[in-house]
Amino acid sequence: MKRVAVAHPNIALAKYWGKRDRGRNIPAVPSLSVTLAGMTTTTSVEDADADSFTLNGVLSSARPLERVLAMLDVLWREAGQTGQRPHVSVMSRNDFPTAAGLASSASAFAALAVAADAFLETNLGLARLSCIARRLSASAGRSLYGGFVELSAGDSGTLELAASPLAAASHWDLRVIVAVTTEAQKEVGSTEGMNRTTATSPLYEAWVNAAPGIFARVREAVLERDFGALVGPVEQSALTMHACALAADPGLVYWNGTTVEVLRAVRELRREGLPVCFTIDAGPHVKILTPAVHETAVSDVIASLPGVLRTIAACPGEGARLVGGA
Ligand code: DP6
Image (cartoon, rainbow, N blue to C red; front, side):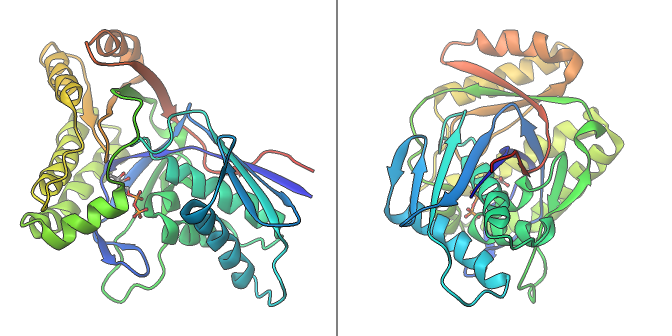
């Protein structure tokens, strides 16, 4: 038997950075993302004599394999199964750069949750799968759903937490243009980066205090489809997150020179009258938001900037789902 699922990465308009509970992977701040069609992870789970995980055609061992098997073991237990879980061969492929700040872990765990749930016939439903994916990578909890998705920070007693859909992909015809500024993998992953920030950044507390207010403004602007109101809190969320990471010890500098040039170009386009804003995750690429009608005007300028290797255009997309298999 083989089950195949696809999922898309998501980009947070209001960022998650820092954990309230590290063991349970409960975020310290609420986040709001848009799931992106145009970049896809495809994952299959099928019977095998021994467990294995292949990512982009390369057999993985150690940590990546452990995390994949952890997901299968959790699903198996959640479904009340006590016997030996069947051995599986898991194969996953991304059609976009892996681990370079393009949220590949989000689509990876979301696709795996859906494929494994179908393969093991656990039928847990999207909310449980979101919760399980969130435990492995909080942003993955959001990629189970399409469109605009929120993940709360829970409160001090929260043990379990799932993301929830805020508005469908069709709610707002935005475009996200990814300015790819390097093909290299990032040096410090999100988990390590945010844990270092929590432990050492003197600005961490300020970020945790400011983030809920920024989130609320993003949420309101999304619900109202008000791009003018979206610009301020989206850029503030990203810049405050990076300010707090920069102040960690040692400081986390996720940007390269081109990152800064793209930020300046986005603000220049805005001065010229285009509705456009930026956000940046834990990597050097810049994600540029604009209403669909302005996509060509914006991406032509961004693609021509020195240091921008290429651009990827994405729009709000669907959540993780099965795509056949027998
Ligand atoms: C900057 O979800 O990758 O992209 O929960 O430790 O796996 P873990 O972290 P992860 O962090 C994402 C951080 C971010 C912002 C965001 O997506 O909200």
